[in-house]
Image (cartoon, rainbow, N blue to C red):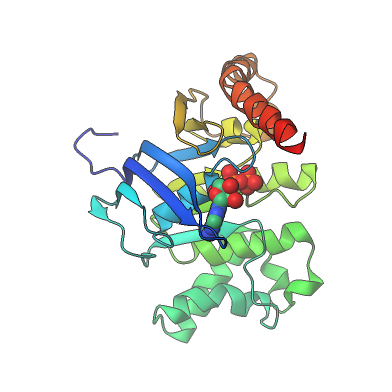
Length: 271
Ligand SMILES: Nc1ncnc2c1ncn2[C@@H]1O[C@H](COP(=O)(O)OP(=O)(O)OP(=O)(O)O)[C@@H](O)[C@H]1O
């Protein structure tokens, strides 16, 4: 990565304070400093409720930072850019549209002619192994297949920035590992920058170039770990590598402390 490139994302002292329904103020994240380089895969881990999703909504422009700066492609973020893709835990598919129509929707919305949109959608469906399922409706698919549709529907738009909020957490363990491999295959060579929020430390290490550990809420960046595992990766085999286990232990030392703080606070609140 050449050092003169504008980072894909820069958070500088970014924070977000929400007004609660009772009229109080709740700080969700504070003093966030983070750089995501172009083409980099960054995973964000942190204790439950610490502010991971809020961080992602700041980057997406869905929420405006209360303090500090959020830059995407070197410019202050003003809303969801046309080249930003999202994948969430919930299936972001239209239940009343066929699989093919779902994947064509993005390009059509962006003004791509129908025949070309269909061709591009078919190519991505083939890549996710759903070429034979284009006429099905989402309810006729398994959870993993629906997730594949969501990935095809995202990648068909050639995103330069991918924001993913626990996209695989509703899936069973085996499907989850398959989807992680699938994601890495689809992402490889696209040059897209990824911010991937997860609860799962193993998943974060297997996928990412950098793992960002956030503190107990209101979250700030605690530590950033560079993951020096080679690519291409297969998540089921890489997690058995000695280097993977060393990295896991190192990051857990940092993350575990924040998880404990969060648990103790929860116990104190309940007492
Ligand atoms: N719109 C909002 N209004 C008020 N408070 C909010 C709002 N959105 C989030 N919060 C609060 O901000 C804090 C951080 O929430 P956020 O969803 O970002 O955490 P998270 O780390 O993604 O959580 P989880 O690990 O459970 O997915 C929480 O205390 C939450 O209740």
